[in-house]
Length: 236
Image (tube, rainbow, N blue to C red; front, side, top):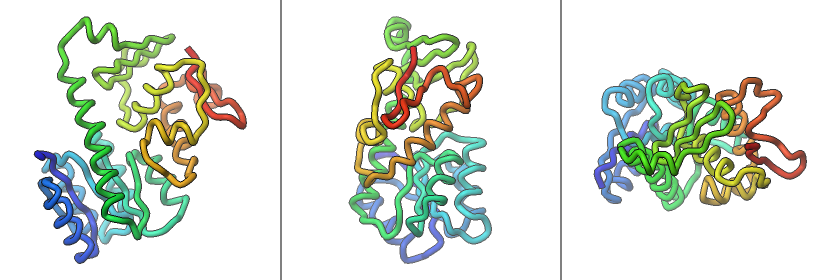
């Protein structure tokens, strides 16, 4: 595998274990033990994915995530030290693609890494596609919103929107099945692709971020609609 993973974790023993684990899996690895160094490496080394601890010296993981998102759409998996809903929601709102709560199993973390890298690779393949006919077939247009499935690109009134891969996956899934209502659990299963142990708040946060980007008035959405007590659907 050619993918490079940046591990930003201040506990040396955990950092070493993660480096060993992902090197053994065939990835290239980089590591940092504090927030400022992690941010510097994220922007200078262009890794394919970042494992980012929340509690870091110098600059916490939330601030590192925010600063990375200002410059890059690299997949970010946050490593949270506790089952704190506030930590999870804040990380997602700042643009993290995923999170894993400590203590975590190496198998679970590896599965998350592989899933996020696959999505990122699909997005890159779409961006490099030059087939105009394929592009036409894989374009969804609704109002002033254009969703290009192959290019992993969303435009509003002709202007490209800055959107994370996770947000795109959710929008694509709903838009390809307009008017069909999906529960939060079904969206977790189909978009996230693994068990979140009932943490449906993840879906709500991602929907809120999407609405802020694609809706004229997020408080009165016209694209992603809530069916109270049931779930969400795409209104075409």
